[in-house]
Length: 112
Length: 112
Image 1 (spheres, each protein chain N blue to C red):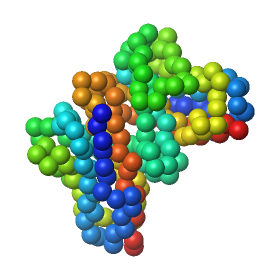
Image 2 (image 1 turned 90 degrees about the vertical axis):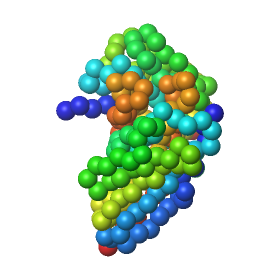
Image 3 (image 1 turned 90 degrees about the horizontal axis):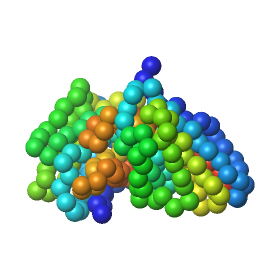
Image 4 (image 1 turned 30 degrees about the horizontal axis):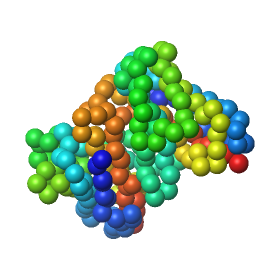
């Protein structure tokens, strides 16, 4: 089965800087990869989906890249704000199945 | 408002006492799924359903049952709960594999 690693458990960043979160996977390359945001005590909220034939996807201050050679996705938040503080999860599908694997997440704290 | 509703939000029970956690979605989604979230382990899929009367095991199905008699409802049943099932549970739905998951707000279950 797929193994997903998100670069660090926690990341602190100064307000206004760009936060970069990493998601690495070990086995097959998935057809797509998703990123979610989770606030304490709440369910994850979908942010972006990027497909294997897409190099980059943007949504407002968010940008996701997908490098199937490196088996890696990068998630960027530009001009970060304290309200961006949350845990960010990457998720990708199991090959040939309907199971969606989630990483353990990176807890981002944006310091004012 | 499009949403996934889980009940109850909090539940404390004793070992062996059968319980049901309800999940309902109002988006006419065909795909529904249950996850549990534990510290350090992330989100792990318990069961999923591709449509009415179609269910399948996820990564950690032992000790759980589900049913999908109607499109909107996907209850999670613990016939004989044990302390290792103490966890935060999330129900989610989507239009199908490859589309964003919509999560409920979670059910925090404690089994003593």
